[in-house]
Image 1 (cartoon, one colour):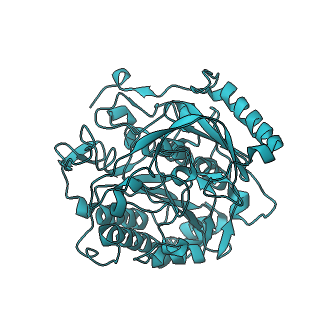
Image 2: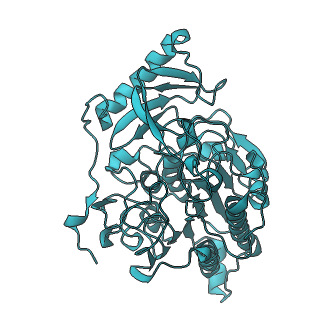
Image 3: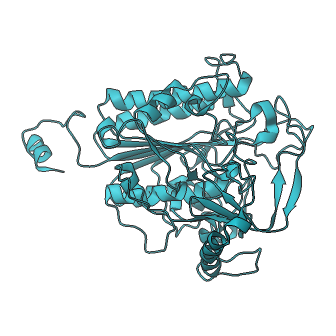
Length: 474
C-alpha cells in the first residue's frame, strides 16, 4: 500500500475507487470458437458488436495473435501456463471423466497472481481436466462457476445426423456440482453477472477474473433478450449477447472508476468450427478453421483495453500469442515467474506502444499429441508435411448439424509469405530458400527441446500432464 493510502487508513478514511491504486487488475475474456472475422470491426455481417468495436477503438487490437494450439483444452492450458501446451504434456480437449488434466505442479495465472495477493475467479468453461485435483480451486482460483469442459460434451459429440442431448453435463460452483443439464440459455448472462459481482466485491483489492464464455461453441444457446435480434440467425444472436456481456464488464469498470488500473483482454481459444455452417463463425478469409494449424485455426482475435496506458485506436501487427499473456501479467504485477521454463514472452513493450519492440520472434505450430506442423517468424510461415482435416471438400452443415469433413495429406513442405498471402495459398519456397532454411533451424531447435512425432523426435524438456489415477476423484 502506498503512503497516501496508509495516511488515509490512519485517519480512518476508507479508500474509494477513485484513488489511483498501486496495482493493476486483470480481466481476461476468452471466447469459444470465435474466428478472426466474427466482430463487426473486422467484417462480421448481419449483426453488430458495438461494445467490442468501442473497446478496439479505445484500445489496441492485435492482428497476428495466435492460439497455443487450435483446439480448446490445449489452447486454454497454454494461456493459463504461458507454455506451448505440449511442453506441459497437454493436447486435445479432455472430456467427461478424462484420464488426464493440468499437472498440479504447473503454475497457472491464478497461482501466479496469488503471489501478489490477488483475488482470483473463473466464470465459464475450464477444460483443463475434470478430476478434483485439476479443477480451478485446486489450481489458483478462489471462485469458480461454470462447466468443466465444452457444452457439447457428454460422453461423445454427436456425429452427422445425430441430435444433441445432455444426459450428464455438470455445472460447478466451486468444487461442487450444483446441477446437471442446466439451461444453457442462462450461461452467458450468469457468467456475466458473477463477473460483475466479483469486480464489485473486489473493487478496493487487486483482482483477476477469467471470464471464459461457453458460447458460441455449438450447440448454440441465447437468452430471450437477444433471441431473434440479428440478421444472422442464432449465431448472430449469440454474438450480440456476448457483446452485451463485454459491455457490462466495461461499464462496471467505468462506474467503479477502475479503468485506469485494469487491463482487459478479449480473445478466443481457437478459430471457428466452420463445418457447422450458419451456426459457426468466420475465419475472416484465413485458410481452414479450428483443429488445423493453418491460420484459420490458430489466428484469433485479440483486443486489449487499458485506459491511460494503451493509446486509443492502435493496431499491433507484431507476432504474439495467448501463451504470452502469462508473462505479460507477471511483468505488470511484478509477480515472480515459475522456476520451470515457459515459452511465453511479455507483450508489455507492445502494449506501451514501443514500435521497435519485437518480443516474439517466432512461433511453432504444434497439434495432435506432439506434431510440429509449421513454424513462422511473423512474415513467412513454413508448413511441414502432415495430414490435416479440411473444411473445403464438402458443403457445411446447417441449423446445428455438422457438415462432412475429410483428411488431406500435405506431401511436401510449403512456404507462405503472410504479408502478401495471409490465406496461405501460394507456395513460394522455391523463391525464398534462405527463409525456409532459417525457419527450419528454428523448428529443429524446438524438436530437440519439445520433440516432434512427425519426425520421431522425443525432445528433452517436455513435462507430463496430470493423470487422474494419481489423484483422488472427488
